[in-house]
Each structure stands twice: as structure tokens, then as C-alpha cells.
Length: 148
Image (cartoon, rainbow, N blue to C red; front, side, top):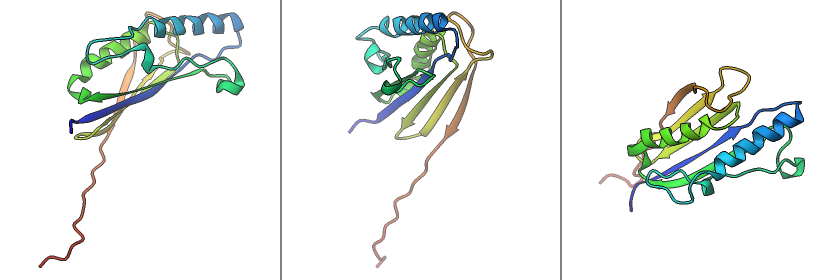
């Protein structure tokens, strides 16, 4: 079987008491997600990977709208710089406070990437700030059969 990689994460939007700003920023975020292609070249980043949450408390939006995404790839870690470039282009076109991407690979463990706004929030077309944390799970399967 081929090497599978799972990518998933969230983008947290801006919490605001200004209802007009909140509606406008969420519409811009929705438009950015819907502007992604339905089909993309590898490593793909498509609109179907992302959720667009409703603005209702009962639908999971208390104050912060949390956009979540996920995908399964064949060894995307070998094309990770290209995937990050596409994801950061998306982030540059959106309003958000923080974003997190989890990369789970079969060969090199788990990686977590964080984007945090240097100000109160990120507005479209601003620079990005990223820090990466890397963790690797190492498990060994012990042979429980007696050695003869």
C-alpha cells in the first residue's frame, strides 16, 4: 500500500462586537474558500476540503467561527513547500486570528504548524507569521514470542 499522509486543521476567525465588520469579514472568508477550485493539481487544496460554519450558536459558532479542513494525500510531505504556499495564499486572502495545520505522516511522524496574527487579527493581503512545532511518534513493536 502507498504511503498515506493526513492533513487537517482549523482557521479561527475574528471575534468582533461590530456586527457589520463581522458579517463583512465572514463573507470575505467564505468567498475566499469558495474561490478555491473544485479540482486542483497535486498537492491539491480544494474548496471541498473546507467547512463553512453557520453563524448560529446551535450550529457550533458561539463567538468564533471555526473553519475546519481535512484531506488524505499520497506522501504530500515530499511536496510540503508547495502545499504551504497554496495554504498561505488562502490565508493572505482572509480575516483570521490564528490557523493550525496538522500533518500526520507514516514515515516522519506528526508535525504541527501555527500561524498567528501579529496584531489583533490578520486582514487580507498582510504578511504572515508562522512558527512550526515538530513532534515525532516512535513506536516499536516488540516480539512477544519467546526466543528459542
